Image (spheres, rainbow, N blue to C red):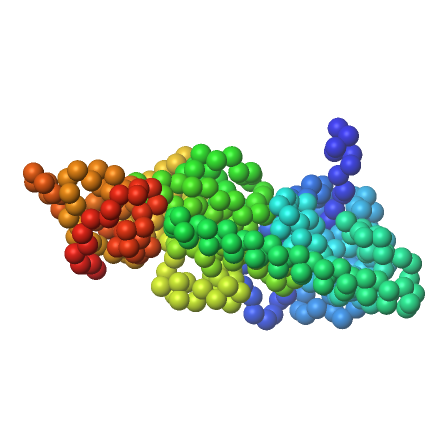
Length: 443
């Protein structure tokens, strides 16, 4: 009961522009997502509303009539916070706080709060702090009432006044510079880890997708891991990696990444670029989609936009990533059957349910197949007594055929390029035995 009393009562407003380009989403769906974001930091949402409007107002974003109409709603619900599901300027934020006598945060501030509450690794916390400071620095202009609500202060939030603003701006700038240096060190460490994985080498498969699409549930299903998986936006904020054996016996590293969201604040895109770099290093990218969500197509577009624009994965996106059409267990029989037929016709699609496990074997087989496309096929003849090398080939590659005689074994083996090079040079990781005779590659 005490925890219930501690929850801040919040009103969520989604301003819906009547004209202008949209992203294909219904305003009601956008409001529902904003409420979900508020729930993600344990806010008690006492009222949610779509406010139609022709265009943003310079002073308060929404019109004066809507501002006045919200006053009795805020009083009756005893709300302590208003979440504006849009980007508001410092001036608009200050004016709304004065009109309503409650704290106001916008979509960027809300997502920053979520990231601050969820990040666990050192890198994640550094990235969140950097994003917070960049956001705060942009608001140190004639707007002070919101600063007291910011979490994780550093002792420089003083009273109003031009000199204090300048001091705070300088201190924030100094802290940002230090954080960027620390993040560069983290990036170098991650680069070394990636180099070490390349020497293993295990292919990397990254799960990407809209937040709450079921990435962590799928990750747990196929790796038997215990990553936090909840029906909650941004349940996962730090990349998690686990080894996994595919049907062919090949080992891979599976990476569960931060979820995407529409209108992701640019501060976060920049701050979390190091985390998203895991996707750049991936050999295969699996886009996990919530096909039961009414805005699944718009969510798909948001994810692909970030992959293309922010990460530069233009070629991979155009060629078509593996799409894991998740949550088919939530569809009715007709829609589920139609989706499964569509996936059967397109080798880039897999219909599955991470909760029930249906279709996950098909996904692993497809990942196996995609990785095989880059493999080199070698015809190898070895002494039959060289059991260590034969075992290494079975462990590292896919043996397509084998012929034995009294003295030798002839095998047709498909290997990753790195393993093929290692075999040719006789540099086998798990065996010091001589690497047999290499004949010629087949593609």
